[in-house]
Length: 446
Image (cartoon, rainbow, N blue to C red; front, top):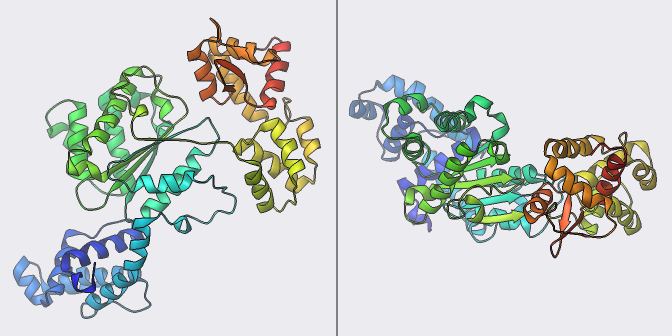
């Protein structure tokens, strides 16, 4: 786009994006009215005569706040006014043109938040940033607990917000049991949560009472009327989607809706505004494959850290490690980001050796006790999984699938991060799990 193409429409979109990035709130209708009239050279009195307001109100209230917003959003160290706003916007817009073109071609990892303890796993991050800019995208991040799903999601949302997108992060853990009792209540919770996150006052309950059709239709029309209207895409990230799996009627209907919304983007321009990010540990297998969102869109599986990535993390904590120490740690916990990180954090203040930390790592008083107890409780809650995993940890060789460790059970254990699967057989994912759960079995606790 050339300088001569800096039209009113371009200026409005640019100004609104800057203000939203700075305040998380879009320009109000009356602010847009004042901005457009000022763009056309009208005085406050002329604007008042045309639109039925008082000139004093437009000048001292609306105008004063508008120019202050633009001053803060532009960040050029110059006070923006009715007289100079057009040139100020144009100058900053020209500066952003080069940046915008570069972003359009390649995601800029430099735009991500500076977190020295976040270890990138190329090309995973760049792939996600590219995908989130695609209209109507569905990005599925699947990994066991504590593999870094939420951290990756946060970086995606941070990047998206710097593209001028509206971003909403919802964790299904925040929904209570009553919200899952009926589809109608869950969808109202969803719409209300999004609305409150965006800090807008769209009438969810009023829309529900006045709209025709079933709950899914009401939810769709609410999105279309309030959440997807406008020029700014909406990125909706849903964390811990597994929390709804125990409610099959709700899960089936809602997950089918996500698939439909994603498919609608191919033929309905409005739904191209919605970008979905879904985080989950397990796949939901009770839904027809043609209705499930888990075989649509782009799936991202989070791998373990490599030896080089572990070295980098240790260095960022101030540890001078070599590959021998990394190899020792990986023999116990592989490259699991959480387990590796906990070991490194333990070494920093206490000046212990890797050997000392790992000596008790698999015990009920070791550094991983809470992580291991969480897995232990999950297995106790599902006797079939517990019995199958017991067979795996007691074996010294890979366990072939059979009536006890069938494929479905093996996949669930894999989704939990407890086993590795290969050629219809399973082994404990980490030596840590073999040692801890073998001891539990010997004590008849599993």
